[in-house]
Image 1 (spheres, helix red, strand yellow):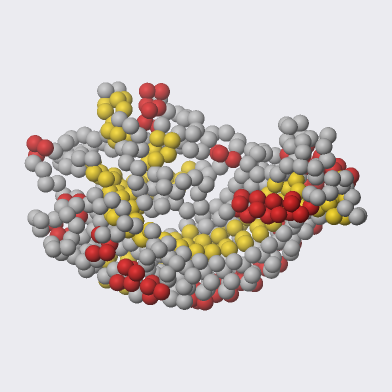
Image 2: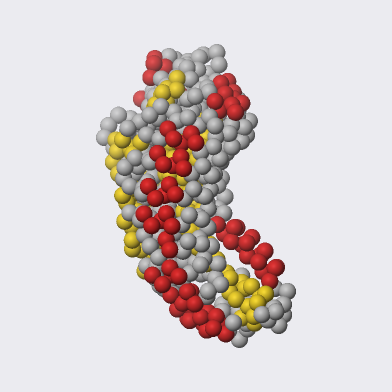
Length: 536
């Protein structure tokens, strides 16, 4: 969304101010652009050609620099926007941007810029600033808190650290703020409550402490609020009920104390609701029938009990419903089993109903694996995949003593060992059984630049520390947004050696934007937590 926003805004300004052919950029700003271009490495690379006027949209300037040429009877131009995204710039930030006194929009996202934010930037009068996806570091840049004209600020995906300073309250005009994927710590300062014009706030993937603050109720204009994986303690504050303009609410991975389901009944504009792993217990309320815009609802990995509310059957626009890994009981409703949408009710404690229960787990976009209580293990008319731990019903002669899977790839022979193919394309809410093994996959991807329905990724990186005879195992890999479980079916009793093959096949090993990113995931083998892995 960031790239589209800047692009659309740029087209409007360009069409508005390109009517004058004789207007030229102010000489002092030409000089400043040369200094900026040299420091960024853009001069001499057929990008910024100073043989052409920077406001002419010629000589490599088109799309990079945009101007307002309405000054001095339409004869003088001033730079209002600079967009240098995805150019793999790997230098520090030039202070010379401050010499462009008319600059309003600066987009340096998706590069490899390093260092800190120059303190001189405090004098700029920007309205939009994106530094998303770089290698910038240091404490929260207080210089930015002095640019009171800012409406949009994104420093997502960098290495900024330390607490959020109270001076952030100076940015009272902010409409959109993104601080995700940094190393920020400490409590959220009460000063954030003063940013009452916010419609968009993302503070995911940090290392904050303390509870989610009650002052979030002050953001009454907020439409998107994302607080995922930032180490906050629960519960979700009751004051959240005041945020009635929300269209997209995502909270996940809370620690500490739990709570009953929060009061969201007034959030009738919600399209996306994610309350995953938030320590929520008790029953799911029945007010969802009034949320007619809901497209995605994710309540997975909580301690929810009781039956699935009947109101869920009225969510006609909901394409994704995740109730995975709770303690839900009662019969699985008929609308779930007949749905053409993605509904995941796996890993619960439903009651088996022989007259209406599913006959198998391969239900297309409906995932019910291990969905029933352990009491069903004693019944003979229920498929093993619906029971806890998928008990084997084969004879000893039919059992296997080894298993090799090329996750996401074709069948390969490595040193006379056959790795079975795994090329099933589904993944949002699916169970796939290949005879000797199976997998359960949950979740769809948000905020991604590529097709959200792709669950098998191809290698786009150079493999490191991988034996040449094993490279075929790393050409593709299966990916999942919430959880991915592989099952070895009907293995003989005994001791086994489990070998897991890990390699980064998407992020590159160079100093470019494509190398930026990190992965954090847990590995469980037979419910034992073996590994917590963080890369990047």
